[in-house]
Image (cartoon, rainbow, N blue to C red; front, side):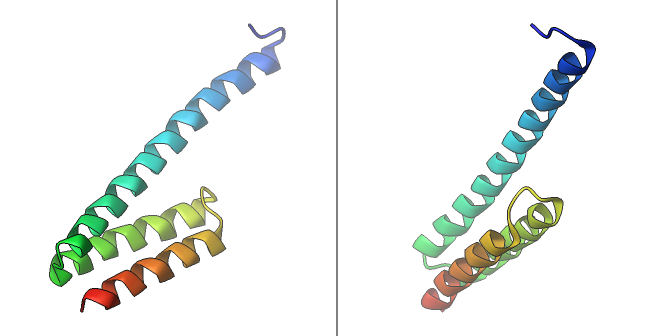
Length: 87
């Protein structure tokens, strides 16, 4: 229970941000999982399409500050290397 109006507001904001972050994390994980499944199946065309989705999400979340830009760049680099290994 918040003891002041400002503490109550911070609590509301934290809840909203936590939900937003959880959704973003889930979306990114789902897209990455689809890409990994395509790589495991040696399906380079599907993997390429899924990679585009993952890269788009990584760029979006890095721009919003959800991910550090170097973290996003590292993940993109590793995903591209995986795609290249099956082509």
